[in-house]
Image (tube, rainbow, N blue to C red; front, side, top):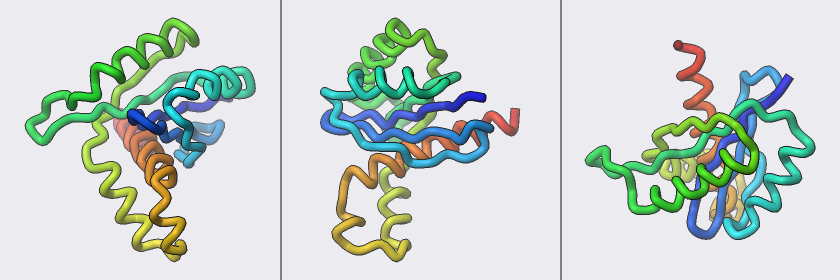
Length: 138
């Protein structure tokens, strides 16, 4: 059995989520500084069997790639070369807003809700759950 890993790429931090071994449920995994992501991924891929990587695809409201997408493309290329895993892009519009809203409605303390790393992990989880839901409907 293996997992699917999801990435919410950011200039400073990257939110990560992964599936359970049956690939049914998406769960928050971690938030990593962007400059340290490949150190983290090296360890993760050594310890876990991963089938694929899902990356959030940032788009504008006009359905165009956001400016950060050129950096994401470089990141994706490096993942392909280093780990030889299939990569899937999932539209990530509004995931940060939805993540922030879900934190607001939870019973979490204010200091925890304002933790940006929490938003990144939840955004990655939303991206991954969207991918899983789409796969079920194919």
